[in-house]
Amino acid sequence: MMTAEPVDVANEEAFRLERHGIDHVPEGERWARPSSLFGMWSGAIVNFETLVYGAVLMSFGVTFPQAVVIIVVGNLSYLLLGLTSLQGPGAGTTTFVINRAAYGPNGGRLIALFNWLTQVGFETEGIFIIVLIGEALALKAGVHAGTGLKVLFILGAAAIQLVLPLLGHATIVKTLRVLLVPFVVLFVIMAVLTVGKVHVGSFSHGASWQVFLQGVAFVIVTSGLGWTENGNDYSRYLPPDTPKGKIVGYVASATAIPSILLMVLGAAVATYVPNAGANSGVTNFPHAFSSWFVIPFFIVAILQVFAINSLDLYSSGVTLQAIGLRLKRWQTVIVDTVICCGLTAYGVFDSSFNTLLTDFVDSVIIWIAPWTAIFLVDWALRRFHYVPGELQRTRDGIYWRNGGVHWPAIVAQVVGSFMTWTVLVAPYGSGWISSLTGSGFGAADFSVYMGLGVGGLTYLALAWRSVRREADLQDRLLAGDRSAA
Image (cartoon, rainbow, N blue to C red; front, side):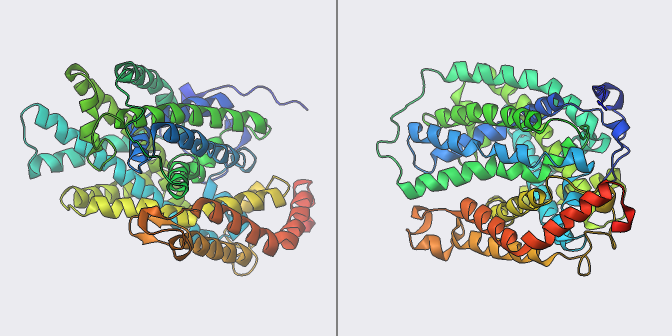
C-alpha cells in the first residue's frame, strides 16, 4: 500500500515545546521531508566557524591551491553525515538509542557519554566565541569589557542559546531555514570584498605530503565526520519509507557545497590578513573588510554561532537521556546550558582555556572515527533496519546480550581508538606511529583512515556471525512472529 505524501506541519509544531525525547516517534507524527534536512543543515553550515576553519588551514603552511584541493577532498566526508542520517526514519528515535543495537543498552551508555562530552565542548566553544565577539563590539563602542560586563555577556549568551533547543526539533528546522537567507547575503558581500585582494602566491613553498595529510584530516573532522553523531537526531521525523538516496543527497549537498565555498573564502582571506586563523581570528577577520561592514559582520556572526550551537545543545540533551538520566528533554537542555555557562565563565577568565579546548576538539577524532565505522557496519549487517520497539528496551530484548553489553563493539571501539591515537597529530604531541614520519606538525596524520578502517574491520570480524543471526531474528519480529523473541 502506498504511503501518502507527508504533510510538512513544521509550521504547526514550531515554537511549541517538543513532546518527544528519545522515545519512538509514531509514523503519524513524521512531519518532515528530505528537503527539511536541506534547509536545516544549510543554515547550520553557512556560519562564521566554517569560514575560520578555512583560515586555520592556511596556518598549516599550505599554498592557496593546495588548500582548495584539501578543502574539496575533506568535505567529501559529508557523505558520512548522509549515511548516518539513514537510520532515524526506520528506527524513529535518536542516534544513541539506535546505537544500543551495536553496543548494547549498557555498553552504549559509555559511547553516549563520549558524545555528550563532545557536544558540551563544542557548545562551550560556541558561547566562548559569542562572548569574544561581544567584547569586540563593546570595545568598538568605546567600552572596555570588565568582569561585570563579561559575566553579563556569558549569562545573556547562555539564556539566548537556550531558546531554540528548548523548544525543539521543528523550531530549529524552521529557524535555520529562515536564517539561511541573511547568512548567504553576508557571505556573498564578503566574497565580493575579498576578490582582488587574494595573494595566491602568499606561500612560496608548498606543504609536504605529511602536512597535506594533516590538512585533510583537519577538514574531515571539522566537517562531515564531526557531525555524524548528530544525523539521526534530525532525520527521525522523516517517514520510514523515505528514499535513502534523497536523504543522502539532500544532506550531503546542503553541507558539502556551502562548506567548501566558505572554507575557500576563509583561506582566501588568510592570504592577506595576518593571523586570521589564530585563536584571535574572531577579531582579526573584520580587518579584511571596510569599516562599515564590521558591525553587520559581528552581528550576523553571533546569530550564526547561536544557530549552529542549537544543534549541539539539542543533541547533547537527547544524549543525556540515552545515557540513562531520567529527565525530560527540556530539562536536559537546561542542565547542559548551566554546565556550558560555567565552562564558558572558566574559559573567559582563564588564559589557558583556549589551548585546553583546542586539545579537546583535536581528541574527538579518537572515539568518533571508529564509532562511525562500527555504527554503519552494524547497520549493514542487520540488512539496514532495526526493530524500533526493541531499541526502546533498556533490559532484555534482542539487543541485550551479556548484561546489556555487546562486547565485539566494545573491543572494536577500544582497538580502533588506540590505533587512531597512534597515528594522530595534535598540538599536545603525535602518536608513536606518526612520529616515525616526522616530528611535531611535520608528522603524517592517518588518524581518520585508521579509526574508520580498524574500527569497522575489527567489528566486522568479531560480530559478523552473531549480528547476522540477530538480523534473522529481527526479520521474524518485524514479520509479526513474537515467539521469535
